[in-house]
Length: 103
Image (cartoon, rainbow, N blue to C red; front, side, top):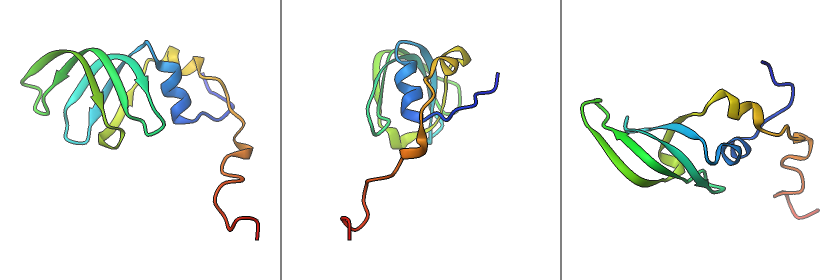
């Protein structure tokens, strides 16, 4: 199904809280777990995690993992979660921030 509105990445992550996801890091490791929380820098905390080595030969089961946002290559989130994300009005995005202080 096509979405007509815009979606911000953080809105998607916040909506995905409590749902399963796969996270691949830039170094090739993958983490499958349940999203517990995220912050404005896309740092995420997963629970009940299975970590797979970059070569796919080794696996670890971990109770929880915190992943720094700048190490994330991509996220795989269930489609039903994507459909639950509220549409956002991006017409005001970026306005009123920065600039020259009203000069």
